[in-house]
Length: 163
Image (cartoon, rainbow, N blue to C red):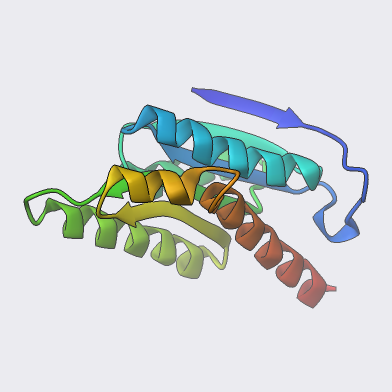
């Protein structure tokens, strides 16, 4: 699923004017994914940036989908100023948790460093579903909103330094 939306901001931030932010969200835990996405969207839409959402099955697919989407945007002459990865990884009884948690984070870091791109990591890595909810809820931890805010701060930094 891909959706695009741009809403005006009451407090216009010149450094974010015309910015486009790609959210790649993992839907493995659907209700948690909805909450993370709500937090991220609220921050991005309040900033008045264009939001593009791509959905993937799980956290390991987030960096790969982001890379594919960035390549497609470049090929069509479009720019993406930031990527926000959203997902949840809950510890289980096997080593798989460590692989998914570590590799999804590494993939996002590699993406940001390799492209000098603003990246916000909103992939929760927790022991329990209750911990995930505490971090995901907009009214509590709002890690989706936090990841979006982190990405926007890097967009602002880049644009300020490029001036």
